[in-house]
Length: 206
Image 1: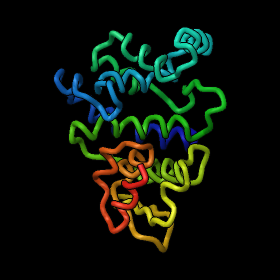
Image 2: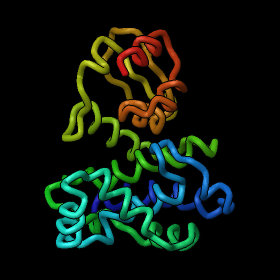
Image 3: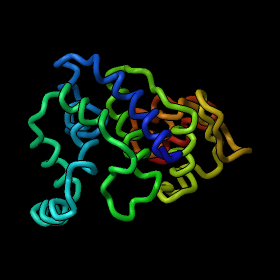
Image 4: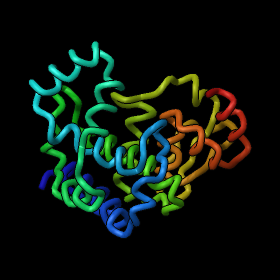
């Protein structure tokens, strides 16, 4: 396997292990994605793997070029059970991520961020591998998916479960890697879990 394949597989297996034990009620629970259940987010995880380029174009046209609307329709139309969706997620690979021009880290970020959308409301551990957390956080702070620099300007972000930080010198904002990444992607529930002398300043920028 290539390096990104092994990192992706490790993160995927962490999530799959947690999903296999969910009850029907937990599958129907709200996720951190507005309007989506845990089952809907899991179905969305499969979208880049199961949707052809032609299907993407047609679906986007029908949704009048509103990707969120298209993604919502696609996830809700999936009739598989939660357990069937887990089996499908378990079979995914980084190389199977079918989004042209998305970049090497895209499949990992897609999995990593939506995994926390599922875990947080179910109070599941915010697990992350060292390499997976590092790559996603690097991408969100200095890579292709980098968020608005003003959101973290003057702050020292520090992961508490892996060896990663950025922005030395300012007030500290701490949390597990998965929670930090989720907060950087505008999940207010994740931002509420952050600690440190700079946490309130970080939350004020949402």
